[in-house]
Image (cartoon, rainbow, N blue to C red; front, side, top):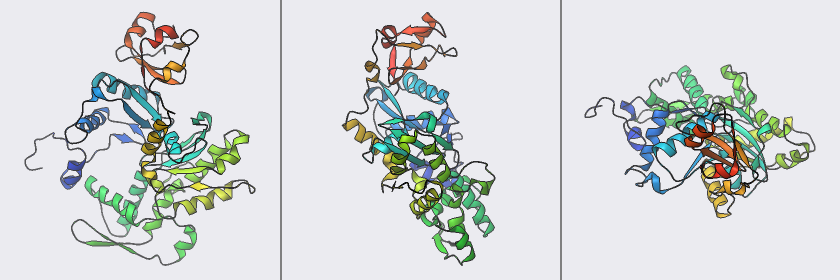
Length: 371
């Protein structure tokens, strides 16, 4: 790019503005951070004069993650925020729980499909049930890639990373989910016109409903995993039998990939085929579900559901933590005490040793809240 030094990095609006001249990278893939250097740069940008214009040391941080993410992902995030940004407190929460809070519920099942991962999370009285969580690595970015393939078949090539962003925009504006894709394949699909940034136009035909069909049929790209309707029903079936009726009647949609026109109707149709005949199925699709994770946190904070001092709920005289055998001495390690996930400081690891049990009274003096 003219006037830019080699190796310069653009983040956010500047990257969007110059996307035609840049190689765009994503630090996360399927909900997991793959490039921690880039991820740290993004967090630094958030605190910069272009965004929040604040000091990281002055504010606690809320960080959300998809369920079933590797524990090392959480540990590394905690290490970066505590060691690099020196934040006073860090709360790492599951996205689905906050999305449920956004609807005013504490019990239900959340189907969250974003850019990189789709998961179904049964939740009872505000607590996710880990044994029932289902997850597939099929989501919005896969739909964008599939749409690019179909557009190529129709004579439109989008090669570069900046052109891929155009494909994403086409997906968001033109694609929809068919209630009966087999029938639509036999009919002449109404074509949609899309105006490209250079002023030219393209016409999109059957690709409009074929691309998002991937969410319900991952086999279209050779993936041997369940469609998201099956993920949802299987998650409910893995839950306690007494809860299943309640979960079927409290299905909550979350994430940008549930915003396709016709998504709710198609999901309801598919779930009815798999659910018991006498079960009432209700699907809640909030209009603001793209931001439901943040809205849920605000609701929970107002009701004091989430507390920064969760570790205080543990009785120091009876509680204890176990230092993992693979604990990292330099940056501390993530442990659980009571209802809290915390970072146990490196000094305790060195003095007590890996694999050792630490009394709650000692642990509380050397803990920093994670979530």
